[in-house]
Length: 310
Image (cartoon, rainbow, N blue to C red; front, side, top):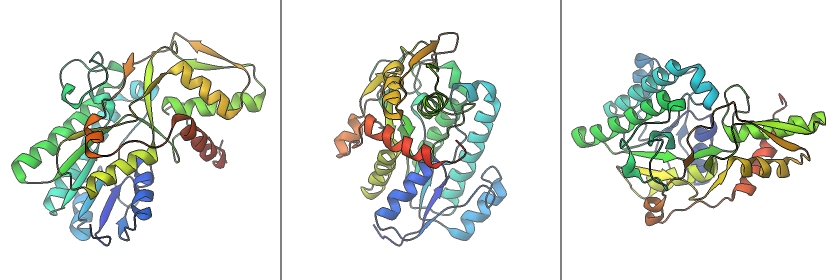
């Protein structure tokens, strides 16, 4: 690849986008561009078209999205479906119009049916009902995948879709009102330690099983697909291993240094019972995750400590 090619990372300040930007710069790419929300509102089709017409990026990573955990999804369902659909439609169509060489659309493992077989293969998409607690977000992401597929088949684009498992790492959101489970546990354990509490509360029963992937590994997978000229299709991106929420909370406690105990609030929803991705398609291409869960949590906690707001 031409290391001077113009590459646009949509959402370059977020968890995923910032990791992709770091990976590209580490790989020697010298023309990586991004825009803040203040500089470019991707919900605005006219502004999005103008940006693409002026900049004409050759490669695009669509990591801009409205994201959040169970609480955020349940509280703002209309926002999750509307904003994600709007951003996706605007960027995907603008990428086609400007003649982009390649694009990576970032989806989510929540696109798969709630009760599908484990580990989850890419072919299980649209084979059953979704998990209700994040259905609006999942529907939006499914529409993004379908849009990429249809543009590829009908308009000759080269758009690939990646479905990451639960991501975490630097630049994560630690706001308890709308964060995902792992950053929320890090903050809860840290604050319990600081206050000298004897316990901290975790949503649900602790029994659901989840797979986690350090975000820099996710970024590496995306760039791997670009550099290996993978031009279409859906690819699960994960570690291939999962843990219970109880085990996750206990590991967070160890990393943070909290010596108390965990109280599980079973009045709160568990979400999907299990969600483990089949990552054999990526493995077949020669890619696999490198960062262990314990190492990744430690790195994420160090990032958390740097954020003075907490």
